[in-house]
Image 1 (cartoon, rainbow, N blue to C red):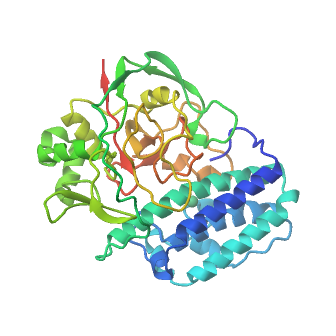
Image 2 (cartoon, rainbow, N blue to C red; image 1 turned 180 degrees about the horizontal axis):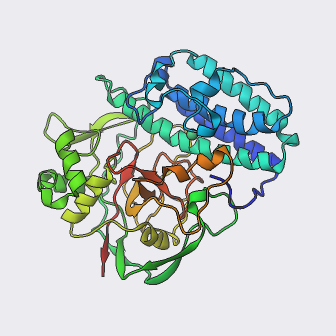
Length: 420
Ligand SMILES: [Fe+2]
């Protein structure tokens, strides 16, 4: 990812944004012990300590090392430990063994962060425009890791038999059931797709191009927990007719019978685990932690289908990407019931039926940061809209998130569409 247009922010505004982003990451990790921040619960998830260090390595490598004369690395071992996947940056520690990095300690990593913060801010006035663009990129990159940090912590805590809560949720909130699912008739014909305004965008959001939409309608909200429970009660997870072949094989092999983190409570009702601990599901809230396979099966059961990313983006242009249940600060994070009117942003990332592939004319940029997106365009599906763990201001209609079809530890949900 590169900005598609030069960052227009004055240096002081960019420096303030840099400080805000870095502070939020540290606030999100503040409730964690060194042990919480060190353990890796699965290959897909990284320890919180690794996120804290890797986002600092990004600024140190691409801004300080490359653009500040005579800059000396904070620790010569850190590039090997905290490079994620940049082949151009040389050898690195195996992704699935990040939990073995018991040292440096959490305190040492926080000291590393403080040193990088100070070095970037001290150099700000002398940074060339290209380096400031990389600071802006690094802020967007760190916002992506803020969401990953939260979902990775959630997965880690879910593996702890004590199921600890790191935040207190709003347990007294009344249940407000949304109305029946409504349908919005989508545009038909050729529409413009992709990033189209000044400001930052990742390279995979362009080039802007035309896509053909056939007659269709898209739901005015996402699928709720209550609706998902009805799918389960109707035998949805046991009926091969609803499932893609790969999805059915996954359900069989993994013994899947409900969204991730769901379990039956003592009274037989469904509960879910969240960052506020385990509690009964809210039937009115959007279902989350479902895979593309589950989303597709639900849509089949419901007599509908998943929207394409083009149908979704065309409809969501009517929404405000800064509105909705997005991440503002370190505090309770969970999808909440709709409060009326079509909402396109926040709560849950919405699976689309579109493969994450390059748009016509796409070309990755030069250098190591050219590895940011393009090399992952194989076997993954596009998700749209952001979630309750996505920092406010990070997402937009053209934003393309992407995951493999079996993955579901992110806040992922479902919006239906249908042909007309
Ligand atoms: Fe990264």
